[in-house]
Length: 259
Ligand code: AMP
Image (cartoon, rainbow, N blue to C red):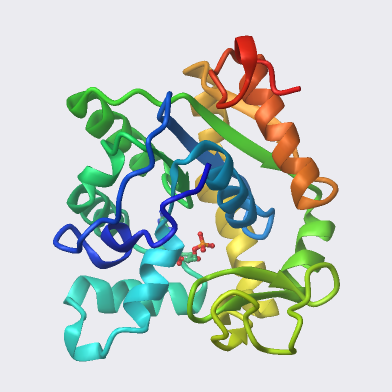
């Protein structure tokens, strides 16, 4: 299974052309939840390859806006970029508006893996209304768990490609050529919001604004807890097992088994 990795319609807006949608037996519609740096982006890329669903990251959306010429950004996008650079959350209304504009991505027959949205109770409630109106059903909310000290360590060494968004780590997943992306050859950089002061603000914000979503999705019966210890492939296998245990129909699995 290969994924629709260009995500042009998600990143550039509803008028952008969308490359061919992968044909999947069951479109997986998942929300990935967990503190910044827990590895949601890495897991989204692995799960996207496995399940065919598109990786829809609101953080990537704002980073893509940042790389536009400022004259091409709307006022809301300019505010969003400033908030993101401070390590603060983008206002709910701006986020919701951008997600609404991308409703086609949510209804896509290839499914979706939402990373970074919803991030506040207000976003979660509005998202639920959007899904209900569009008759879209979430399969699960996967929540990745890891102690804060381990996360801070991971974030300090994280590097991302300024071109394709591929994620590296200086110790565990270095680029072959220092500072150059293995996939697209663009420069690999440290995100501004991965610098220590911004990381501490983001952690506090997660506790205050996003942690309440754990109870919210638990009550809806959608929550699947997955340990984020170990390497990316191990965590991905654990995620697939959690989905399998919840009765999801995984591709290539006879009778729904991942083994
Ligand atoms: P991420 O890549 O998910 O860590 O997001 C990077 C930054 O983008 C966050 O620190 C926020 O400033 C902003 N952001 C991403 N998603 C959201 C969201 N759903 N609500 C508010 N701000 C967001």
